Image (cartoon, rainbow, N blue to C red; front, side, top):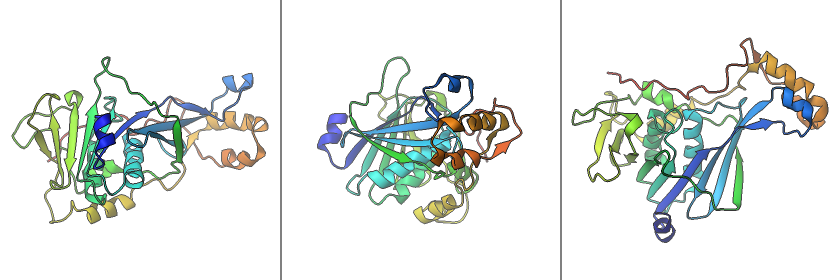
Length: 285
């Protein structure tokens, strides 16, 4: 499919993966080893046509490492980096349910195909554990700082969309075993899927909530998202904040204000930034 995308301008193939957590600030001194540091997350998106890898980076003060953050990075990438000549996007990722294979990314795809100027179809293929691996052969990288620019796509499932686990043909649907999802612009609010990649037939999930006409249009979904992103820094534990303050003498003074201004909460450090990683996939009426 990579070769097909290179020779077919209307098709764009993207490979994405959430990389290892980076400890921040980056220090070589042994003193930092015993102190808690900020977690910085890095979602890489490799475009097989341009051969460029975009690194979408944010720290735990700006967002968590769950499905909303992953969906927001992909949404931003497709709107900003996929040209208007592209008609179809195919994405490949691992099958981590909490981050990649879930209703939040499905809601994002349903929004994307209505908002993007030219993309009419988005497919998401989940690689089989133990039988596939993702490669990033490019040496060209572009770093994008995600400064609290995240949307709450999960909120769409409480508004114009609703989660379903029964198909339009009354068959049971399981996120855990689905190898492929698809959203089409000409079928607003409907997610298509396959039970295996060899199947020709797609099954369908109707995510549309009954209500006023047009509420699954581009304008409606986009307006709903505008009120749903993080506006304030997320707090860290007092324990971690104290450790960061101890590290200030080891880092440039220009960064001191950032670390001093991080808000705290009363919880313990066991609250690793995983909000929206585990989501309840239960059907509503």
